[in-house]
Each structure stands twice: as structure tokens, then as C-alpha cells.
Image (cartoon, rainbow, N blue to C red; front, side, top):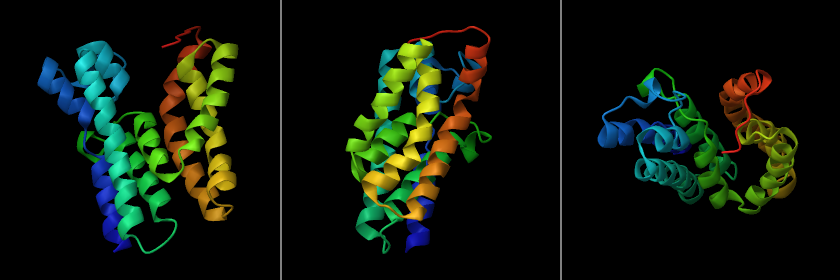
Length: 192
């Protein structure tokens, strides 16, 4: 059963909401416009507020659904967190879009609401601090993911597995911010 839940989580993550809404509302391939990121922010900037909001909600809900199914039907305590990792992996490295995807932030939010919502509040602290220092929200958000494994470990469950899966999730999101780190290094500052 756990294998089936994992497969469903990955497939839910692979629903390319930004791609679908950009095609529906603007007849664009979201990978070819703006930043090329298959996520809500690029969709909102390049296709409009409505498709951007719909992308955000869909990505949030597909992660929430994956974690809910894992909690309800999984037979191991770690299944919700593993489902979160798989849904984010499917979203960030979408097999249906030549392994291009979003940054996984909306999926992370949807997953954490189901796992432990207080972690979202704790994650905001380094995001705000880094944003104030760096004057760049994207870079600040990417760097703040370094705190995620430790938050999962200390707040959710002090188990090495939580630290490892949390590290995988953080890495999956952090690597998608490399383009932001590079742009920051070249002088770009963007608060939103």
C-alpha cells in the first residue's frame, strides 16, 4: 500500500498546473516565457493574476491531498513526510515536462499545513531576516530552506529519517533557486 501511495503522491506532484493554466488562459508554454519557471509567480506575471492564483491553489491542494492520503492509508508514521517529498519531487522535476517544473514552495506549504502548520511560521522567520538583509525575496526563500530539515526534526519528530527526508525536500527546493542565487550575485534585487 505504501508503494501505491508514493506513486500517487509523485503523480499528483506531476500535474503541471502552471503549464495547463498558461495554455488555457494565454496559449503560452510557460517554460518559454518569463523566467521559464513552471510555477505560480511566473504564471501570474506572464499570463495574469487569475491563472497565477489558480496555479498556486492547485499546487497547494495537490500536496495537501498527497499528504492526507498518506496519513489516512499509509501504514508507517513517516508516510506523510515521504508523500510530501514525492509530491515536491514530481512538481519540481516533472517527468511530463522534460523534468522542468516549479520551485515547490506552494507544494511545501500544502504539505506542511497537513503535517505541522507551525513549521510554516518558523520558516517565515529566516525568510524575513534574509529578505531584510539581502533585499531579494527569492534568494532569501531559497537560503531559508536550509532550516527545514532541522524544523521537521525538532518540531515534528526527532528521528533521523525526518532529518534525511527534510534534507531531500530542502535540496529539491534549494536547487531550483540556483538561478536566483546567480541573478543575485550579478546584482538583481527583487522583493516580489
